[in-house]
Image 1: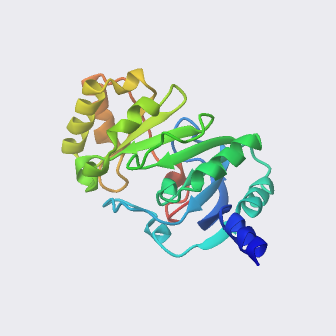
Image 2: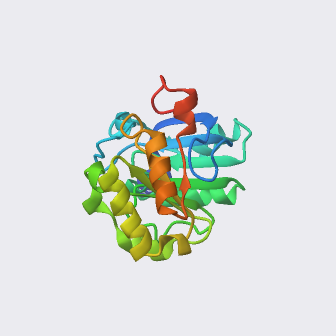
Image 3: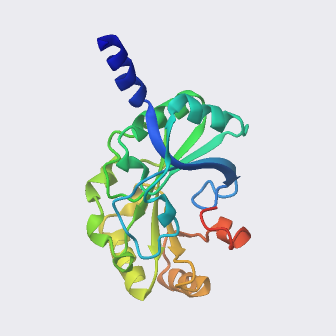
Length: 225
């Protein structure tokens, strides 16, 4: 009986609650445009006002790492993105990231920056979404994450307003973010016109990359793609 109990515990240690696994084009970051398998984990402790994946806050199905990797391999791609929700809210996400790297994939992690990335496998490309004032979750930014970023990682600001833009510029300068890794500014979809954000970036001569969400340009009527 004890051996059976240990086996159950061991098996659970290699499971994650998954909202969906799907194959699409990466819509953001320096990897935009690459065919990618997305692993969307269930759960998120944040409630950003512009969130477009609220359906991942709850529900989902438990999946074993072996089954997850089997689904990923069936799509025959090099790129895998682990996202959410907030994927790091499930601590076993760290083990999945390692397994994916060991399998030879180019792995990216989309995280809110509210939870520590200190233990994330160094082979993973971390895309850290720093929360602006208008997100409603600015207070959740874990600034201790910054020293754990390297040149392959990326910082993203979703800009909703001029207030957000000015705040992001202040962080950019005070924390010398572009010395750590590339920085992206994105207009909040349907809140801030892309042309307006582009004008602000050019006027301020910022060393950042503006990005639009490619998937929303292609599949605007299919949230979550």
